[in-house]
Length: 96
Image (cartoon, rainbow, N blue to C red; front, top):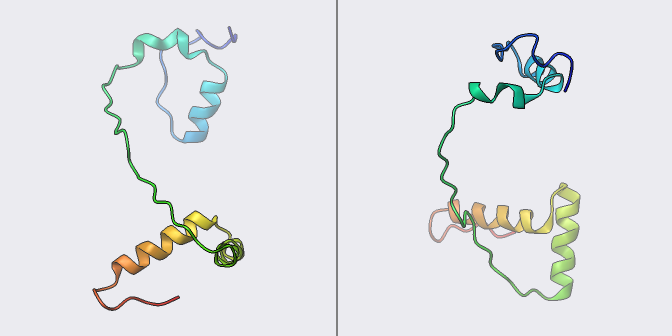
C-alpha cells in the first residue's frame, strides 16, 4: 500500500486532470471505495456494421496509396468518401 493512501480519508476535489492523475498515482483507490457511487450503464451491442466490397487489386492498391498519403487507413478513407457522398443532395455526387 502506498504510504500516502490513508493520510486523508477522503478523495480531494481536483483543480485539473493532472492534479487528479498525480493523486491517483500515489493512492490506492481500494482505500476509498466508500466514496464511489455505483451507476448503471447500458452498453449498445452493435454501434456500427461492416460492409465488404470487392475491388480489383490495382484499385485497392490505389486506395491504400491514397490513404497512406493522407495519413489514414484505407477503410477510414473509404468511410470518409462514403459519408461525403451521402451528404450531397441526390444526383449531386462528387466524383473522385
